[in-house]
Image (cartoon, each protein chain N blue to C red):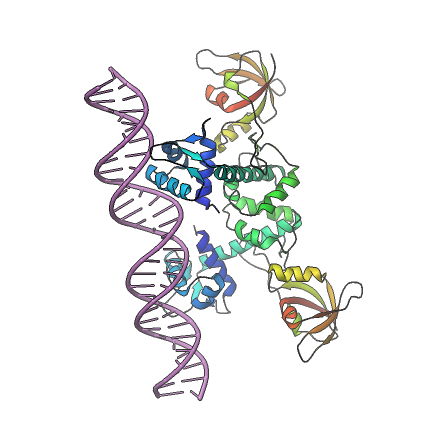
Length: 220
Length: 220
DNA sequence: CAGTTTTGTTAGACTAATCTAACTTATTAC
DNA sequence: GTAATAAGTTAGATTAGTCTAACAAAACTG
């Protein structure tokens, strides 16, 4: 059974993996906020325990077992977030830190019951997909709002970042998942966008914000 | 902040403390299933961190800070058990192992919300008192069924032991908290008791079982 | 109260996860 | 294609929590 630390490495590997499933030591070091030598030695341990494939000076790759375990931890994190928001009345900006701890609980029935009570959700409160019991995850194909054009109508579907600060910013602007957004214009100079949503509000969103908003396009 | 290991020591100290608030190293060793030298060194650490008072060859005592922290961990454990049973549909025999993990989560709001959703319960599913936010616990004055006499009518109020096996045994006998029990007779030889409860059932309960059932006497 | 048993302590070792300093290999940039 | 920079590795130390073996103190027991 993976330790809590190992689970955090597996989760990071899962999230950082490129199309070839590879992750560099330095990326892992940045993501987990530990030194590169620490990652180096931990990666050797992960290999010894069958979670990753690794060769000196090469990027790290999850084994099938590693992928499964990583997906289960992510599943538990996202189910927890959903449970906290939908069943316990928390705001989407409050749940990450709690889920970060709850995700490591070893009690399959606990998460089964959450799943059941929630009606088997496929996305979490930030629009991220929830892996199923087999570790499979529904493919999503959203585009960044930053890549959309003036005149398009879109629906906010997910976020690339769920930091408390960003979520509080969205709250202050009354932006939530499912909000329909009309793009009025895109400023050539700084890539900011003027948009409207809900009873004819008009807001300017900076490029930094637009990049983090994932949307589904519903019309021109 | 106490580590998870420290929290487990504090909890054990709280539960094992005699009327003078003292606990021996060997008791702690047995309770926590670690060697005496381990306890010895851990107790020194706990003292260094301000959780206990300790002198060589003397029993250990919690400081006020230690008592508070222990009570909060116990509070979180018992609130979790109550939440799992009342809000998530678990049986009272399933919740201990899960609560043992959830109790260590550092997220006051999480437990506040549980408390609120449960309507501020004062006992857990096994009848044990839930410490309040200040660490105070309602005094209970139950007696063991084993100390009762033939002819008395009692109500099952709590258990001294909440092992899965024991709880499954009670389930198999349809015994739950609040069940009214009439004591028919007490066998002088082995202290077993013949009792009846619910639509005129008649059961024999061994001394071992009777000792673990805490009751409130409601009549002769 | 002396001997035995139980309880508690010390010493020393181990594992997991982390660090810094120093070195090596790979990559990038003229 | 070499020099500079970035990425990765090795060596060695540290801390938390655990262990066994050996010894010391306290508590029981006749």
